[in-house]
Amino acid sequence: MEACLYHPGLGYYESGKNIIGTGGDYYTSPDIHPVFGRLIAKQIHQMARILGGDRFDVLEIGGGKGILAQDILGCISKNYPDLFKKINYIILDKSTALRDQQERFLSKFTEATERKVCWIRDLSELSGGLVGCILSNEFFDALPVHRTAMVNGGLSELFVTHKDGKFIETADRPSTEDLSRYLERIRISLREGSVAEINLEAVRMISRLGKILDKGFIITIDYGHHSNDLFSQSRRLGTLLCYYKHTLGADPFIRIGEQDITTHIDFTSLSLSGKDVGLEVTGFTDQMSFLMGLGIAQEMEYAPKEEFAAMKMLILPNDMGRTFKVLIQHKGMEQPVLDGLKFKAFFDPTILPE
Image (cartoon, rainbow, N blue to C red; front, side):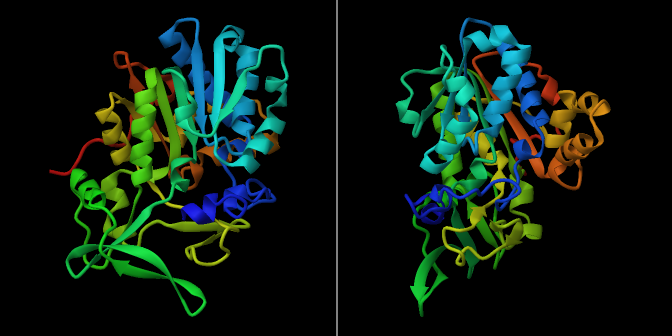
């Protein structure tokens, strides 16, 4: 998965092709309508008011084409000039091809006298602790995972091998004991024959982010579930999916480097790993509730018919509205109250089964 997505020159995200949007393989919320970015900007503004001070960092993890950053900065520059003066927008993206697209979208904010956007390829490039907000939209789902299976009462890992000119899976002993420890922490016992993806990279990343955040918030928007739901029998074959020209598939061994490969996120493990480094759960909800709390209904009220239909896609309960979840964590402050979390979460991601 790492090679298929990120291999220099050959990986999916390094291909230089238009992979996101109408002419690509899948949509993201910023592609649907700019209101998505505007409402996140509104939430960031409230966070900045809570933090105060003369500095506010925004670190976006995985910048896509740069549309989200463009919409956020455009809204802040227009509606919140005091915040715009002190904002420092950083994009972490190791894809050279996507960074080129981002720079084109964000030229307005990089050619100005006061440069507002900079790029890094790794968190180690940050010289000091962040004060502000770390943001990601559909980042964690594209991190490479370990595929595991319960075979003859024991946990096996599904590796990739090559036979008769084809890639195939083969089960063997797990490559690391961290896989068993991961399941033990969330009190999950897989049933015989079940397949499950374990995203060790995701929990490592949230730990790194928590350590570099001195004070502020982390907003994670992605599709996923509480661990009890993610590893339930209804998903006994796992959640690994492939996207190619807006067609859904489940075979990662075809179209190597030409299709997206994703898995659903375990928000329980993200929350628990965050707690280890001082991140508290501010709240957890779905995208529909998050955007409603920030005023998308008011935005839709006076929108033209075509724009109304696009905005509606972002909150449809049977589509993006409930599929995508929003986890907000905070550090260095008492429990804050945020508009995006006005609606009560339908479950607490840190609650584990007895």
